[in-house]
Structure formats: C-alpha cells, structure tokens
Length: 290
Image (cartoon, rainbow, N blue to C red; front, side, top):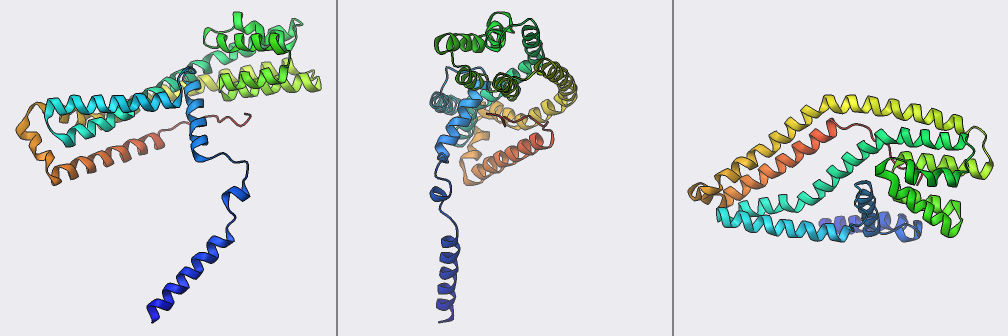
C-alpha cells in the first residue's frame, strides 16, 4: 500500500511539473524545428567552407557512401566485422571533418583579406562613390575569394535597385561575422546619413589587422600541440589497420571481449580528442548581426 501511494505521489508531482511548463509551440510559436535549425547550421557551415553548391543532404549521402566503402574495404582486408564497423564509423565522419577543415582554412583566409576589403570600401567612399557602387566595385577590385559574392550583389542591385534586400542576400552569401558588421555599418550609413563612415572603416580595418596578427601567432604556437594530439589519437587505429593482415590476431576482436575493447577504445579516443579541442580552443566571433 505504501509503495502504491508513493507511486501516485510521484505521478502527481510529475503531472504538476509538466503542467506548469509552457508548451514549446505555445511559448515560442515562431521558433523553427530542430531539423530546420540543424539544416540551417549545416548550410551556413557549407557557405563558410566555400561549398555553396553542396546541400546538407548531399553531405549525408556522401557520408553514408564513404562509411559503406570503408566498411567493405576493411572487411575484405581483415575479415573481421567489428574492426570493419569501427572504420566504417570513421568513414562516415570523414566528409564532415573535411568540411570543417575547409571551413577553418577559409575563415582564416578571409580573416587576412577583410582589412583589404574595408580599405577598398573606405577609398571608394572617400572618392565619392555611392555605397552600392563601392560594394559592386569589389566584384572586380576585391580579393579573389569574395569576388563572386560581390558580383552577385552588383547583379541583384542592378536588377532590383533595393539596397537593403541586396545587402541581406550579400550577408547570407558571405556568412561571416566581419561581413555582417561591415554590411550593417553600410546600411546604417545609408539610412541615417552617417558622416563618420570613413573613420569607422579605418578603425575597423586597424582592429581587424591586429586581431588577425594576434590570432595567427596563437594558432602557430598551438599548431604543433594540436597535431601531436591528433597523431596520438590516430596512432592506435593505424596500428589496428596494420594488424588487419594477420587473421589470427584479429580473430580476438570478433569476440564479445574484443568488441568491448574496440568500443571502450573508441569512446576514450573521442572523449580525449574532444577534451583536447575544448582546452586548446581559441575564441571565435559569432554572427550576432544576421
């Protein structure tokens, strides 16, 4: 009887707690779903990696194909299903890791060229060009990495003549926090007629150069440590792949104890790698002016 009363009390408390919480749909009716937010993050990562023509669905299909290919190849070499599954998981993660690496490299490249873009904008403004003309000129005089985005802005503005909407599409195409700041500064200058735009651009250029120089020094100093940690994580699995030619050794991994060793080793490597990235991370600027 006491256990039954305790169960009723617990159910009652649970219902009270759940009833006191507002439903997600009622509290935030305009909030997108989890799938929509995930898709938006993936699209932004692909844009930042310079892969605008690739969709998140295509990346997932590529991950599945690489996972199947890695599983089949290792299975044919070793004849051990547990080891093949482990490398199939690595194959599944490989395209996502490549996208993140491309994104990291492109963000670093853009960090170096943004001061030049801001200087070009400042020079164009001082020369008497309008803001749309200054931005459009970057399609031919700007850095190679960002010329396509500014060429699209020029084409959009010639077609519509709506500066604000074209600026929003330019921000989406750039997908960069510095680009957001520059675009919003130009929007404000056009709407309220700011007279200090040249000074603002010169200050922003100096700040971006100092930030790029400091970050480059920090990344250089931590680069060898991060690479050593990555090699330490990859070394056991490379040794396991080399042992794939010895069938007598790999037979042990088809047992329950062998599977437990692989799972525990994989979990340990993932935790250690994520912890290394967390400890050695550098602060990154987020897009707060979307």
